[in-house]
Every structure is written in C-alpha cells, then in structure tokens.
Length: 271
Ligand code: FBP
Image (cartoon, rainbow, N blue to C red; front, top):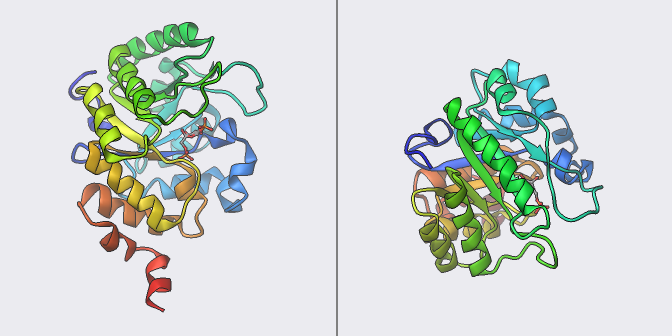
C-alpha cells in the first residue's frame, strides 16, 4: 500500500467505485431490471456524477467508451474476470495488461482474488505481476477480495471478511473490496486488519433505498472507507437519485433520513 496511490480514485479520502463488470461476471441478466443499462453509455453518463470517484469496467467497454469520457470519468481497469458460464473452481482470467490499461488512461487497476480457491496460488502470482506493474505506472490497486471455493461461497462471516481485508494489505492492494460482514463491529474488525489499506464494502444484490443506505451507513460507521457498487445503483429506475443519496452519506456525513430525501422513497413516505 502506498500513501498517495488512491488520490485519483478517492474524494476527501473516501471512495465510491461504480462497478460495471457485470456483463462479464453475471451476464445480461443483470441489465434486465433497467434495460437501458445494457448500453455502457448510460453507465458512463452515471459515472460523471460527482459522487462517483471511479468507474470499474473491463477492457472492451473501456476501449469503446472511455475515450469520449476521459475528461469526465476516472477509469478503474478491471483486469480480470470470468463469466457465469464457467462452472469450474473459482478463477478469473486476466483479460488485459496493466500497460494497456495505462495506455487507455486508467488511474487504477482492479483485480479479483479468490482466497481459498484451488487457483489461489496462480491468482496471487498474477496479482503480484499486476500490482508491481501498476506501481511502475503510478496506478492505484483495488483488490476484489472474495474468499471462495471448496465449499466456501460468499462467506460473509466476520473472520472471513477480516481475512479478505488483510489479504489486501499483505499482497499490496491500496483498497480491499470486501462483502459486508453484517455489522459495524465486524466491518471495523476488517478495517483494523487492513491497516493503512482502505476497505470498501461491496454493494451486493439490489435492496430497497432505506435498507441499502442503512447498510452503507453502518459500514462507514464501522470504519469502511466507502463503497464499490453496481446493481444497487444501475438496477434502480432512478440511479441518479441513489447516487445523490450516497454522496450525502459517504462524503457529507448525512444521516440515512437526510439522504433518503434525495430519493423517490421520500415522496412515497410523505404521501
Ligand atoms: P454489486 O454491487 O452489483 O454486487 O457489484 C460488485 C461486484 O464485485 C462486481 O464488481 C462484480 O461484477 C460482482 O459484484 C461479482 O459478484 P459475485 O462474484 O459475488 O457474484
């Protein structure tokens, strides 16, 4: 972890990564709730929102769209990814090099590590190469740290998530992206173990405005440095509203009640 490595992808020390690698990881099914988000242009437009400190996308999407947005969006190059069609032990193909990501203008790289998978050793070695190349290019390093495999699937227990956060620090990530472990205390435990590396909560499947904002607020209270979110933003009918609300919670220290005023839920509650 290097002290200034996250400057380009943070705001006042906090991070809000808009994740849009779902077309690889989950497939088109994730765009069904809000079909216009199948068009990357729609999501690049969302990423121009002041709340978004970086947009995480795969190579093809970056190549096709980033040149038109380079002045308005901070690019996080999600280097590896595997489709949901893959049925083997958790693994992730490295789809582009750090050098090429730098050429395209990326400020940071993103890399999934499945600790606990039969492929952990190779994945850690691939991560090493990417992390060191990122240092050569002054790019930040974000680890999607998801312990998984051999019976461990989406484990959100406090000890597992703390281990995931610690792997981020140990292997040289500047930011460890982890699943929410269910309470502010457990989040704090993970954040402590990550030391100087930032820890951000992974958004997860879509929930309602209040439940989502409460979880984000709890994670921050526990010691998280922000959020990396996909579906809980782009699957909403009004993604800009939830970004307004997240901006209030993450960067303006607003309460959930205050933040909810940015969303249509507030209008429904007032009726
Ligand atoms: P969400 O906020 O939609 O959960 O996205 C976060 C993310 O890490 C994405 O970057 C990735 O595509 C997806 O979750 C992977 O989810 P999983 O591997 O748990 O199915």
